[in-house]
Length: 326
Image (tube, rainbow, N blue to C red; front, top):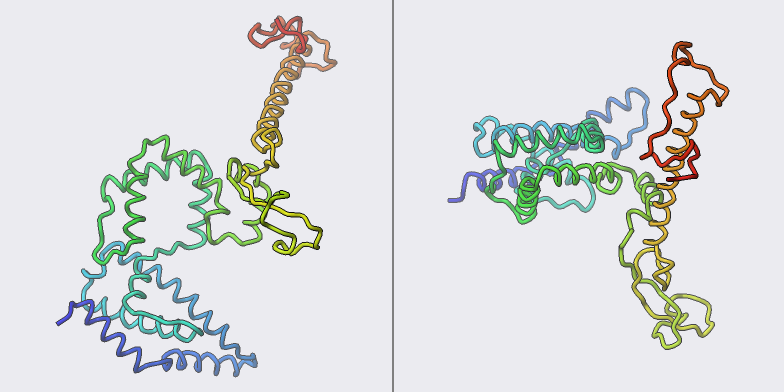
């Protein structure tokens, strides 16, 4: 005799085979009649997608129940209710072309492939991108991990085991490292979040290409008289030019001097110089304002009688001239 779960699977497989698409057809016929009565054209695919959308919401309800109490500990009535729902869900999925289902695999996917609603997803990603919210999220993770560390699950596959081990390793890192990684993930949402559209993901990549690919080694084609690659290999007009493959860091073109690393370093130095200039200019204008040489007036007249404070030496000024340093 097989296990209780195997008996469940066998019973559901038998029921699926006997039902075929009858349950789905029954549900669809009912909707088709209502739509025809209202004068609408019936689109079978729209009906199917509408039903799947409802069932996707129901999956999250089953998952929350399973997180609270594992499936094997459910009472028999709850198991029967879930199995009936699973048959309906499997039948609906089977109506899509090219879909082959294994009921045991489907059960694991429904119960353990955790779904998060769009609102919850947005809230989570926005929190990870915010330093204060990310710290709150991390404290909650650490508290939950301390109370209930993830343990091996019966029937756990390699992917689940790897995810559990990776999460455990992350939770054992120092707090500062954990927070840094969460913030980095939050700032890179378009690269990790599957709900982001391809258009937004491409735009994010294009806008941040130099930063994202900094230091990444790329293989490109360069001219070489002795190269084994010809024009025809590359689909180019026949000019007798030969090529070879060469690895460069992203942005480099055969010379370290022309590499992206130097360009980025120059950009950073420029931004730092601009920031220093703005700071010095603001302090210089403040000094002129206090001396009454800026052509402005105090909002409170009493402030005009306060003694002027010369710039601090550590600010790097001499006689209020920012371009002269001591």
